[in-house]
Length: 373
Image 1 (cartoon, one colour):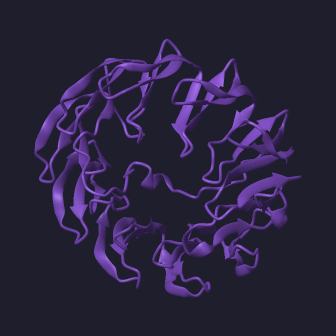
Image 2 (image 1 turned 90 degrees about the vertical axis):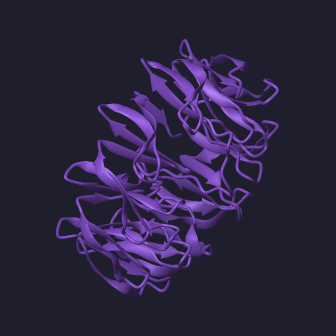
């Protein structure tokens, strides 16, 4: 089955993963790999939990982290103590209702933080629980929705289904056409699209008819912006959307009117600071919401700004860091830069370390990989 539900994110933004947060988590631990084993460091690079796991995810809000030992996943706390012994083939993050997806003997179910299995593993595939308490599950090629007790709430009837959004709509597919269902299981927007995205900024969703051009609908299904773009991001919080037309990228408002004419060879979505990375004649810079080039094209590549107001850029094959004014705060001299919350990871000599905003080492390069997930 073709992948229909397009969460349209360019690779340029993947390196620059960041998490919005209020304040700084002084107890933050990050997973790192050393000599084939994963452990955890603090933000100074000090090893807090020694490398001993085959895989390790970062800690969740409940201060538990998923770790892999001998091909099975379990959970540890921040002291490194094993809270749930490794016996799952796969595990996912906990949903807001305190349940997490787990895979046992090739089937998916759900368990609670007590370690008790709440929904027996019986499904071929499954999604996390949505805020409305429903989770999409698949059995024998058909998808439906269960509640937190495991009862089937919406029967198995869809060829593919995704999680509900906060306002009660979920993307679902039947007979190669995608629409949006309500919590009752009835179609809120009938299947008619070749591809479709979730409702994001300004209550609009990207849709594609016959896998051709992209347009935007509102939550009633009304085509607010007719399909005419070759590519499109979701609308940002500023009410603008970066789109592609005739191989050039520009910016439109919620009526589909171009506020920045298509002129860029490539472009990223707007960051929270209101700037978007764009490429022109082989060089990358940044524009504001009016299309003004506030940071002139000068980089070989440029990533989106993180929540701390910094962005990684590349010059002559080396990574550096700039601020929102375009000032180079870390000269391009590293093999890689990762910005995670308020931490700058830098790669040199094939190893990762931690630097400050002037490029000085807080922790020398010593980690084979850093887990930013």
